[in-house]
Image (cartoon, rainbow, N blue to C red; front, side, top):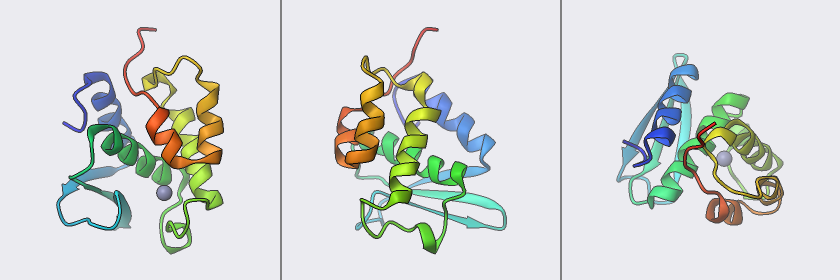
Length: 131
Ligand SMILES: [Zn+2]
């Protein structure tokens, strides 16, 4: 289980299946929340196991967004948080996951995705929508 919310958890598993990705929680990541690499056509996401559930879910969805966009490898490695690629990855995260985002003023998340990942991480509410 990546998240106690079943709807969010199922969405993560579905995205992994669609993107040929697997997730490993690791205690050995100290300097970053998560990293992704591709090997023999399969995508591997390593997530820091010390993150809160909110940050873990965000990090997993962020890495899945990297894979979805094909933004993997040296060129796209996070050198600065303000990298244009990181903003695109977070915009895609919000767009692709709108079914599992519960924020009432949803459009603000696009603004946060552009101005600040820490604010987006704090403000975004993952859950399920009965639609
Ligand atoms: Zn990133």
